[in-house]
Image 1: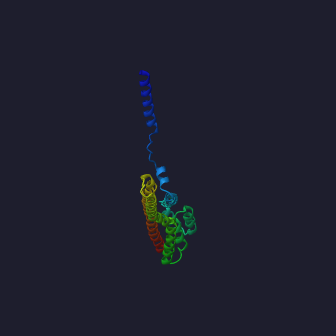
Image 2: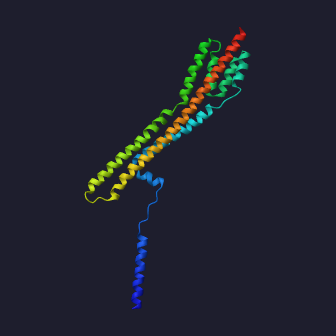
Image 3: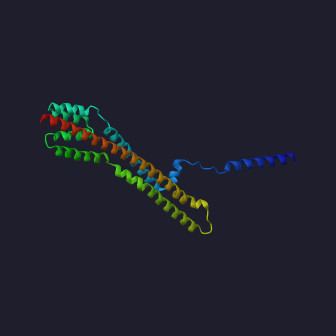
Length: 236
C-alpha cells in the first residue's frame, strides 16, 4: 500500500513538473521583434531613416566648415587693397575656401568697377553659396512629411489584413489570427511618427545653421563695402 502511494505521489510530481516546463514563455518585447512584425512598411521607413541620417551628417559637417570664421580676413583684405595688391587679396580668399571668402573674392574681382556692380556680384554669389548649403534639405523635409504618412499607410493595410482574417475565420475567431494585422497597424504608426519627428528636428536645426551662415555672409559683405568705399574715397 505504501509502495502504491509513493508511486502515485511521484507521478503527480512528475506531471506538475511537466506542466511547468510546457507552459508558454512570454515573448520579450524588443525593437527588432517589433520592427519585424511591422511588415514591409518598416523596411521603407528604415530606408528613409538611413537617407535622413546620411543627409544630416553630411550637411552638418559641411555647415560646420562653412561657419568657420577668420577674424583677420577683413583686416588682411584691407591691407592688401590699401597696397593695391588685389591679386594677393583674391588668393588669400581662395585659400580660405569658405562661403564668406568666396563671396568676397567675387567682390575683389569687381573692385575696380562700379560700387553697384561689385555689390551685385557679391549678392549673386552669396545666393549660389546659400543654395549649395541647402543641398539635400528638401529631401530631409520630404522625409519628415512622408514618414508619418507611410506609417499611417501601414496602419490601414494592417487593419485591412486584420479584418480580412476575421472574415475568413467565420465563427472561429481567434485573437492570434488578428495579432499580425494589429501589430502592423500599431507599429508602423509608431515607426512613421518617430521618423517624421526626428527628421523635422534635424531639418529645422540645419535650416537654422544655414540662416546663420547667410547672416554672416551679409555682415561681411556690408563690412567689405565700407572698406572699399573708405579706400576708394582716400584715393580720390
